[in-house]
Length: 154
Image (cartoon, rainbow, N blue to C red; front, side):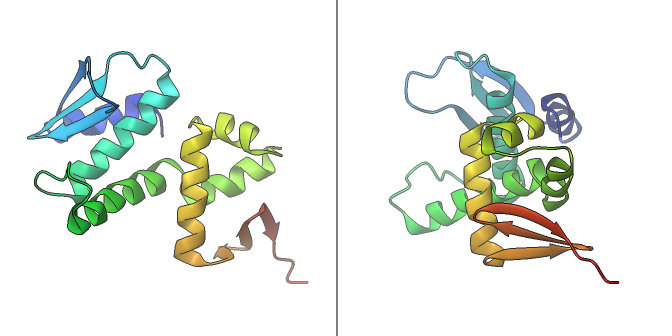
């Protein structure tokens, strides 16, 4: 999914997407049908990862959850991130990347058009969700180290 496709989702949902010069460490923020992305971030793939997470907040969280000392708020933050991981890097995309010749995290992140940090967090999420591996159609995806295998039923 591209940045433009995510921006289309914001438009379809009636969310205003703006740039904002954050004075804090925030890179993005969602509140009251507005997503703000730090105007200092110019790299499209980083903006895409931030936008995906903020859309995750729109779809999966409610209220002011900025105080991450609160357990409930942390849980909501995780829900938003999970949504973004599955939206930007569905399991099938890992299979496609493997068969396109990606051999390391840098190549994989480039192929998927996400940051390496986002990719690493996504792989950790999938490992927590599925365990050592997940089965998708005729494939087995091992998460650490990342390996994709096709089942041979002959």
